[in-house]
Length: 298
Image (cartoon, rainbow, N blue to C red; front, side, top):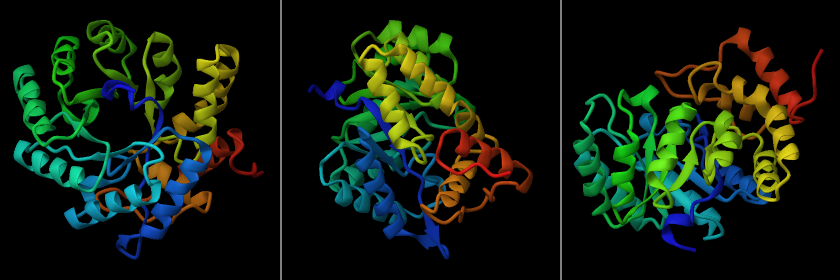
């Protein structure tokens, strides 16, 4: 498998469990094992869903080390290393490489609003750390978006092997897919666009929903590849309420609540995020029940 095609299928953006203000490493390892047992194709640690922005450097390294150890090479591990500071991103990417990850997830620099040329040069500089990169486009969080033309330029960089596209804009997705051709592995960054993204020629998803429902996401992907579009579509609609519920408030607030409801970790979340609002909890419970993950309640 070429470097530009090793990150395909369902990659779970793992939540980071905390207990009494500390990283809950046993829970993190147990979640990684559960994902592997469900057949996911890769794991992402210390991304947005993993609250990396609220973790210390030592905690991020601990989490990466724990997941790499637990996975033991069975699937690729991707570590979030991006920031809006290029030298800091280079340093974090080099540290992740030393811990044995397969690639780094590098968000477009937020807040500073770099030009297209600045975006390309940022990724060129990070690539010098010697690790494969997944560029991450999430304009709702960063204030900047990759254009199809800039995505095509990134595809020309040897170490940029994939793009996580999380704009939620299928027209932009269409244009990016057309612009990069076979130059990048293209991953949906929004669960609700996973199936249409595959239909357009995308290669997988970096998923939030697969935290509570890994087997269902894997089955959706398997059915699509087997030509069972009806089956894949049925799973999409079965999961649609959960796709919506996990974004009732800022990610990862709802997914932390979902994982706690399933007994997979505590709900502890770090400021400035706060636990899921009480009025929204019944909708989350109904969505978990609709997906077959939690017994329906009256």
